[in-house]
Length: 139
Image 1 (cartoon, rainbow, N blue to C red):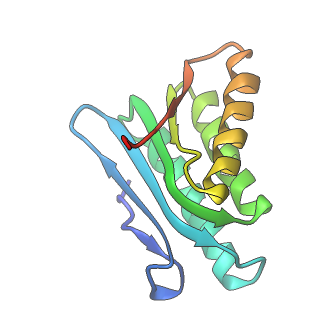
Image 2 (image 1 turned 45 degrees about the vertical axis):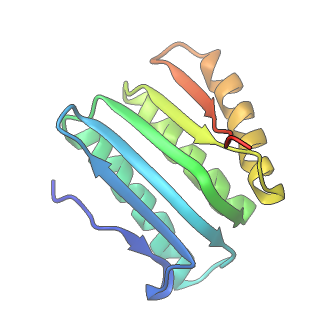
């Protein structure tokens, strides 16, 4: 499968998704900025990119998924849930998942809360491990 490039919403850097697949088969996905587009072509392109990342994780030699939400700003609920649906699908295909999140900014605390709920809920189901790493900066 061809590895997709980074995703920039509208060609700008307000919202972007980057990823890397290393030689050990670990797929790291980073989300940056805020996604406030509710519908239309831009939101559909976002959902399509998440589906592409899901296919990349399940059609290659990926051994672990690392999802970095610590730089994610305000995101629509629907867009946020799409991230967790992607991670759930990856785990359902046998991949362990680690989520990285922080609560340092008010908008980031929602991602941390949602990540906790996701890990608690999915972790009770049989399957590969799913973990949350809470990132804190030294003061």
